Image (tube, rainbow, N blue to C red; front, top):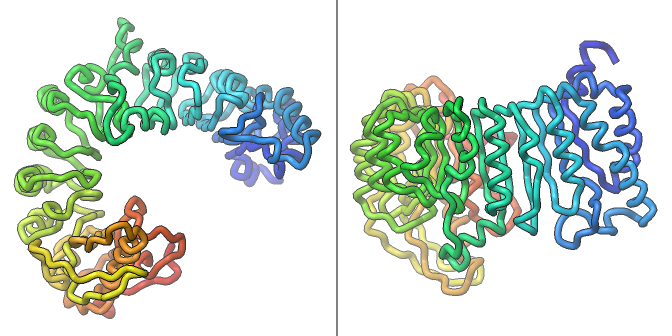
Length: 485
C-alpha cells in the first residue's frame, strides 16, 4: 500500500472481539502489540465496544452462546488477555478513544492502557455497571480536552473518581454526562424521584481545590434528572458558551449566569421557566436555541415571553431555533409567534409545531373507530404560513414541522393512536405537496415532518411522511426526492 493511502486506511480502528471477528483479532492484536502493524503509525481514533468477559454475565455483553464452542471462547479470551493491553498502549498516535465497558469485561486493563496514550485528548466512556460501587481507575487519565460519560452511575464512588479525573484535566473544554439507566430509574421511579439529585458541582470538587484552578469548560451537556443546577455551580461554569440541560434547574442558576455575564451562544433546555426567560433577556448574541418540554402542561405566559421578549433580544444572531416536545395548546405557531420568528432573518434551521385541524375526518383507524374532535386552537392557513417562511427567511435551509391537534380518545387502543398520528402526518405531507407557491426564493430549502425523537408509529416500516421535501424553484412546489435519506 502506498504512502498516500496508508494514513487514510488505518486512521481509525475498531477492536471488537466476537465469534465473527475472533480469528482476525487473534492475528491483528499481536501485530499491533509488536509494532509491526500500520495501525501503530497511523491510527488516531480507536473504539472498543465488545470484549470477551473476564467473567461470564447473563445480563450484559457476552454469553457462551456467542461462540460456537467453549474452545473458541477460551482462545479469544487468551488472545485478549495476552495482547489487548499491549496493543492499546502501542497506539501512541491515538487522539480519540471510545470504550463501552461492562463490569464483567476487561475494563481495568483497557482503561489503564488508554490512560497511558500520550496524545489522547478526547475520550468517550460507556460504563455499563450493575454495581454502582465498582471502582474505575478514572483518575489515571489526564490532559483530556473532551470527555463524554455514557451510562454514568450516580454513586459516591463513581462521582468521586470522575471528580479526580476532571481535576487532572485542567484544560477540559467539553463535558457530556448521561446517567446510567439504572440511576435514571432511581430518580424517576413511578414518575417521582426516590433519591435526591446530586449537585452538578460534585464532579468539579477536586478541581476547585487546586490553587491554579481557572474555569475553562466551554461546553456542558447533562441529561436526565440525576443532577441539579443552582447558583452554587457558577464558579465552575463561568467560561460556558454551550449548555444542554434538563430538569432540576433552580431559578438561582439562571440569575447567577446573568449576574456573572455568562453569555451562551448555544442553549438546549428543559424545563422552560420565568428564571430562564430572565436570563435570556439579560444579553444578546445567542445563536442556537432549542426548547424541549417533554409535553409538560404549560401556561401561556412563558411562551408569550419567549416570542415577545426572548426572540427579539436575539433576532440578529439566531441561526437555529426549535420548539420540540412541547404542548401544542400553547406552543403551536400563531400569527404573533410567526411575526416574531420572521424577525430572525439569519435563521438556518427552524422546528415549530403547526396546529393542523382535522378537516378530513376518517371513521376508522386500525381497529378503532373515532370521530373528529374540534379544537379551539387557532390554525394558520398552511399556504400563507409556508409562503411567508419560504419568502421571509432567505438563509433557512431546513424547516421541520410537527403537525399537532387534539387527539381522539382511543381508550386502551394503543395502536389506534399511533396509526392515527401516522395517517395525520401522511395527510399533512400530501397537502404540502399540493400547494403552489408564488415566491422568488433562490436558495435551497428542505422540509421534514418531525424529528427522529418524535416516534409516530410502533412499526419500523417507513411511511411516506418520512420522505423529506425540497423546494423546487422551477415548479413553485415542495417535491419529494425519493433518493434522499
